[in-house]
Amino acid sequence: MADDLGDEWWKSEAAGGGGGSADPSDNEEKEKDTNMIEMMQQEPTPVPASPKPKECFLLPAKEKDEGAPKTKKRRKKKISDLLAKSEPKPGVPEDLQKLVMDQLSIKRSVIELEELKLPVCPKWAKLRKNHKEKKSLVMLIICSSALRALELIRSTSAFKGECKVLKLFAKHIKIQEQVKLLEKGVVHLGVGTPGRIKALIQQDVLNLNSLKYLVFDWNWRDQKLRRLMDIPEIRKEVLELLEMRLISLCRADSLKLGLF
Image 1: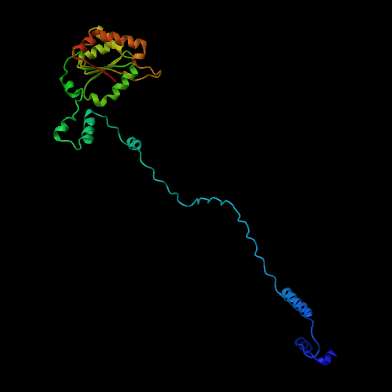
Image 2: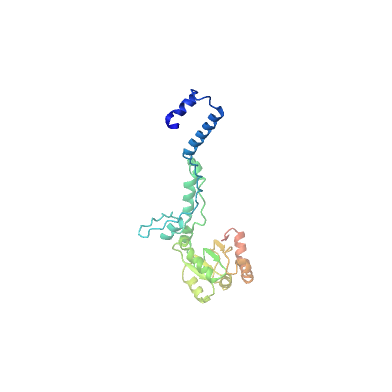
C-alpha cells in the first residue's frame, strides 16, 4: 500500500488533506527528535585549553671570550702617585707667604695686601752671614737621642742652606773631636742631646753669647711612645741645662725658646 501512495504520501498527511486529522502531540515528538538528531550531528564546540604556567629559570652567565681583548678601566690619578714620580721639594718660608698671597689677596686693596705679609722667623740667611764667632752657635736643637738628632739633621737640609752643622751627642763621637770642631771654625747650627751639650758648656768650650734660638724636639715620641720630657734622665739634664745661663738669656730677650 505504501508503494501505491508513492514517496509523497507523508506530505499530504501533514497538510491535512484526505487521510484524516494529525495528532499535534505526534508533531511535537517529531520536532524534538529532529532537533536532537541535528544537535548530535553538529561538531562539538572545542573547549579552550587553560594557559600553561610560565616556567621560571635562571639564565646561565655569559662565558667570557678568552680571545676578546679586555677593556681596562682608566684609574684616576692620585696625588700620592704624582708625588711618587717626582722628587719632593723641601719647603721654605717663602712657600707659605706665596700661598697666603695667592689665596687671600683676592678682593683686597694694595694697602690691605701689606697686612698679609708674614714676619718669617728666623731670617736664617741673614743670621748665618753675620755669624763670625768661633766656639758658639746661632741655633741649638735638643733631642732625646743620637738617632733622632741624625734624623733631624737630614730633615733640615732645606732650612740650613750653606751653614755648618755640628753633631752634639755622645754616641760614637768623642767630646775631644767636638771641641776641635768648635775651636777650628765657625759653626751655625748644633743638634744633640742635653747631656753632651751640658758637658761642652761646663768645659767652657761652647759659648752661649751668640745663641739666638733654642729649640726643643718636644713632641717626637720614641718606640716606647715617650717624649723628650717623659724620660727622667733627659728631663733632669734639660732642667740643669736651662739653669746654666739659658733662663737668664731668655729673660734678657737675647734668646728665644721654641718647641717642635
